[in-house]
Length: 117
Image (cartoon, rainbow, N blue to C red):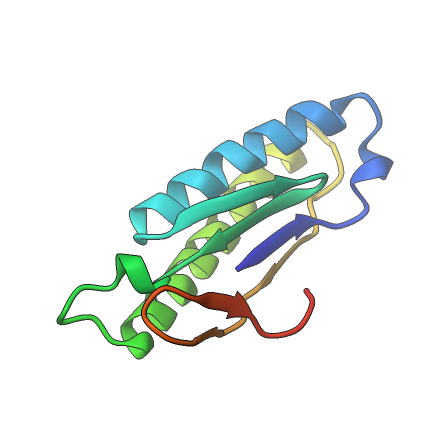
């Protein structure tokens, strides 16, 4: 999963505080859905769900995809809440993109992403 605040540079001085608040809340959503943050990028976060070593005997790729989608929906809900708070302060809304891509699992210990975000 890849998330990004679009046009982050337009948020001036508040951009860093906005990014930090978003990253904190997105991290909670990802963790609660059973994902793990892979890395932070300049305007968002990259997370994974269901990498081979995290799969249990009862978990299938489709269940990991559902967890990723749950996290994505939770992140969008958090963004709506943040935008409501920003509207009350008369500041511009956040535009957040969330992209969920399937992983190709190749063998017991190898996984790689299909394509580029």
